[in-house]
Amino acid sequence: MEYDVYYSTGGGSMIYGGSDVWVNNWLDNVAPHLDYPSKLLIHRRRPKNLEIKFYTPIEVIWQGDDPQLFDEYMNNCRRLHILHGYYTPHKLITQNQDKLASVVIHVSVDLSLKAGFKLGLPKLKHFSADPKWETKVSQLADKVVWIGLNKIPLHDKVDVIDIPNYYEFQHNLDCNESNKVGFAARCETRKAPHFLEGIESYSFTDIEDWRWWKINVGVDFSSTRLYQFRYDMLDKFYRRQDWGISHSCHLDEPFGYSIFQAFDYGKLPILQMDWLKDYEYPFRAFTKEQFKQQVNNISELSVKERNEYLDGFREYLRQYDNKQEWVDKYLEIYNS
Image 1 (tube, rainbow, N blue to C red):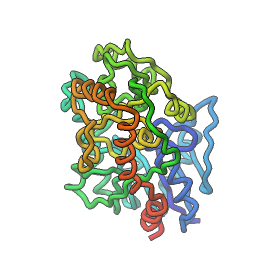
Image 2: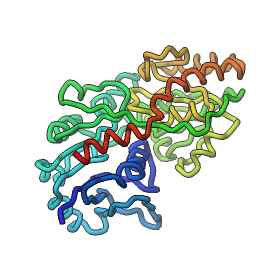
Image 3: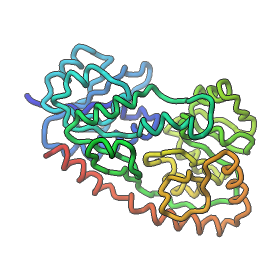
Image 4: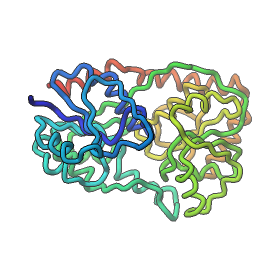
């Protein structure tokens, strides 16, 4: 029987970042409505001693369980769709390039690799990535989808379909009076975790990545209390009342689930200059010094004033609370 392959590097209850959230949204809302028989192929080993749950009607195959069978499924499919792929070349993709119907781009590697230079840092904390591969795989695919809010360099090289992620506002909480800062993001360079140096704060991230900044960049995080990231504890972290300002100052952020979460949970964020820059918002920064000044500026506000800033921007963001529109656009691609 002919079938289509949907290729990913993660998903299910194993969530480390925004791309995993996106894959789960796809599995929950798009996969049940696919017209053609389909398989989800996850190109990685299944974690040991950890049960990964999937809530999807399509078959899930892990590469690590049977590499030969995984290759056969890839090589014999009718069409290949990349939901989230690796950022370096792989022969499984190139040897099936004639079947590559679509690829979803979750981050601009071109921009992300320049983050250290832009922020004036001596070293770059980044996943393995090749900007030439980003361009090549996009040129190979029949359709290229970008999940972000702003245009990226790839728009100048290939035809891109813009389908920004969606976010469902469920909490709509008010701000609190705490002047401590919270950071709930990965520790790659463009997220600028070093902005927290010398600031009373809490960090909810990967401990080993956090240690990299201390060893390789010499950042003093003595004012920050660190918690190991676990997705099932995310809600609890955001509901804490002992922090009220969100470090959302991420450079070249594609969409920013964590930024939307800050607005949803009542944590007034400090944003980068480029994130939805058409919306007039006073609490933006580009440097560590500017970030610290913005913490001071927010600290001088009353809770009422904080809520006024947060409510206005939150209403603006509701245009992205559009799940059904998001689903329909992807089904138009996959069922065509």
